[in-house]
Image 1 (tube, rainbow, N blue to C red):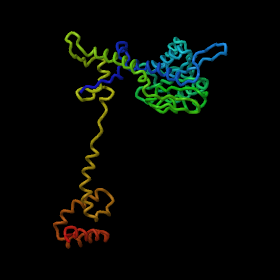
Image 2 (cartoon, rainbow, N blue to C red; image 1 turned 90 degrees about the vertical axis):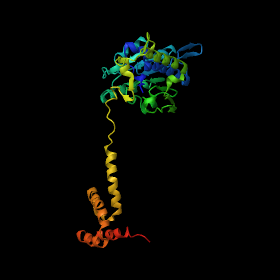
Image 3 (cartoon, helix red, strand yellow; image 1 turned 180 degrees about the vertical axis):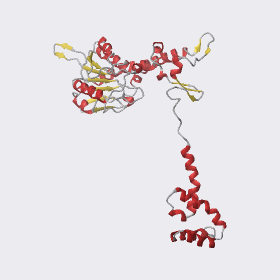
Length: 345
């Protein structure tokens, strides 16, 4: 059996049309803002009317990846004043190109990782970033968090104290809820309220617009399957050396072949075997209470081996011999041994 993991699709130009993470994250960023707008109890754009002026909502997007950039664009279309932060310096130009304000602590130069993701921050960098966020988040109406690190739980970016500093009626949408969430108070799959702040923790945000999500996912799959088919012969012709195949195939003919998992050693089976060998010795020991004085496993095993020989010898002769070799505490055990075979009532 061959298993292919589409999440492992490399982020290269050739594979963009097959990148399911990007296509679904794009929808999650859009839908996250829509969910926030539905819960937010005020208008989002600025309105100047005869009755007065309505100030625009302030939206803060944490993480300027695919989901974050779409969240910025959607919030801007709805009339919000948008700001965003990211630990990757290169994201600043992308944020500003969408009309949002980019904020970044001076203590953090750049935390770009591989594959377009951010690397894990050091403790000092985390402290500097937390200080920046704490001072900015207290003035925001809507917060969208999107930070993820491949293969690790989602980093905690918003603490309970930060949530409590936000004005009542504010909304937080945690797009990283599936991996534990970026917000300390997030409950995956639930919408909770704390101190007047609503925290949305849906674990499948793109699934809330299923038609579009399925449409894009189907296109991703079709584009990948095309590379596995010989169009002239019109039959399956997998090139196992293709970089896309090597990056996404997890198992082949029942064996794990992906480089990230193939070298994982199987669990050793030696321990269960050792336990099985000790089992007969323990059963022999139960037949001979005389071995109770022994404190080590070797001492217990020795009487167990002698048990068959003592059964063949005369019981009356074995008892005095044992009494002479060992303390009197052993005598009750010797007396019980002949009683076992002669136990017919």
